[in-house]
Each structure stands twice: as structure tokens, then as C-alpha cells.
Length: 336
Picture 1 (cartoon, helix red, strand yellow):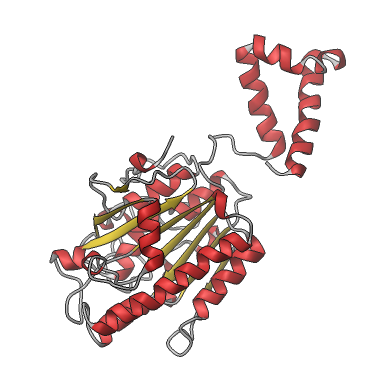
Picture 2 (picture 1 turned 90 degrees about the vertical axis):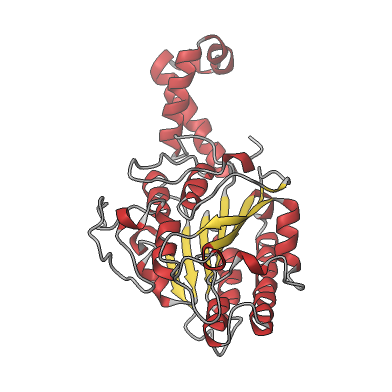
């Protein structure tokens, strides 16, 4: 809690106790709260409302950085020889190389599934470049779209700072931009491969976001142009690994690294110059989670699907998940 929030809560404490017990009872706050458990709960709830603080539960971390690597197949991790930042996150946190995409193993359908915690049959996005659902969504929020984790964080904590930065402009149709404070596309990334990294560094240092999605497209681009599991593919993966290191350093420079959780994952893998099929090299993708309140136990064996990502992020922020979601939080990765 910041100093300003402590001051607001102190004033709110006096207001609440004055209203309940009169001025003289205010000075007896701590003794009274210990004796009267039920009243203490009521007062804490009132304080949270007055201070504009979270009511649903304590956040596991104040900052979550979701780094998405389009086209990053799990098959590549054991073969890659120059990904020190990804390997450091894996050693210091938890991960699986068995997380699965939904079918078809394409981009838009999987990014939306990752963001909204439900299946394509429910949210309706079914193609690689979907901008609107091809099947009517089963549930619509007031923005007219199936509820994403960005929407739920914004709805339940309106003061949360939420951002989304991407290289592929198709991402902006999948995040519910009315629920984010800032959204931008690094449109020149094919000529300037560092553009998204610089944008992310600047945004983190300036805004200290509570939730930020950073989606790189470079690996998928190389996969289509030259091929998956090729020297060029691993060279691109190594370059993006360097950008991940710079994003981590930006968290440190912003003074929020120790209160952050970093997630790195993907939408799909691939084979040859394509994806979209049912082969495991297309379906199996990495999921790495590292940071505050995260165990450093390495690989976990529990099954994980694409839609479990949203549920895990929701768990970090103590969000009440909507009934229409199907994802499950990877609770085993948390220390408490």
C-alpha cells in the first residue's frame, strides 16, 4: 500500500469508527477489532470501499507481465542453445512444455482463448485472423464481446493500469480494447525488430502497469518465411530472448521487479512453414511463470490448456471468474 493510500485508510478508519461508536471509540480501534471479529470484518470491508482498495482478496503480485511469443513451439526449448533469459525464468520458477493449444492451432483463435479462459465453441473465434467471432459468442459483456481477463480486471478493479503491446495488429481485435488503458502496435517491426521491446521498456517505466501483455510475432514470421526448427528459427528465438531480458531489466529499473510475476507462453507451434493441424509440434507450447509468490520447482506435471492462462492470471489478481470461463488456475505454482 502506498503512503497516500495509508493516509486515506487512516482517515477512513476514523470516519467509520466515528460513525459506529462515536469519537471516543475511535482511539480504541485495535483493541475493539480484536475482540469483535464480525464487526472487524464489516469495518475492513467499509475501509476497502472508502479507500478504493481491492475487496475480493489480496493480490499475489501487483504487476503481471504476459509475454506471448507467436509460433513458439515447445519442441524448440530443449534444442535452443542461446536462450539464457528463458532458461533463467524456467530455473527460477515453474514451467511446462506440455501446454496445449486449442484446435485449430492458429493464431487468433488461440490468443482469444488464452485471454478469455474459454473454448472456441464458446467465444466463437475460430480462424487464424479472426477479428469478430465466426460463431455467435455464448456470452457478451457490455462491450459486446466475450469477457476477457483484461475486462474482468478492469471491471473488478477499475483503477488497475492495463496495457497491451503487439507486433501483429490482429491482437487489438482480441483483447477488448475498451478494457485497457493503453494499446499499441509496433507496425514497423519487420524493419526495426527492437521496436516492440523499446515500446515495452518505455511503457513499463512510465506507467508501472498492473497487467501488461507484450506479444511478439517475429518467431512465427520466421517460421512461415523460412521454416520451423531451422537455424533461422532459433536465431530469431535467441533475439527475442534478448528482448525478454531487456523487459525484465525495465521492471527492475521501474522499481517493480520484486512485486511482479512474469509469464511467457505461446499460441501454437508449427512444422515446416505452416501450422493449424493436429500434430504435437503444432499443439504443444511452453508456459513459464516466474516471480513473486511463485515456487522455483521447475517443471510441473499437471495438465494445462490454452484457456488455463486467463484463469491463472485471474487467480493472481484474486478475480471472481465468470461462470462462462472453463479455465483452471495452475494453483500448484503458487507458494500460497
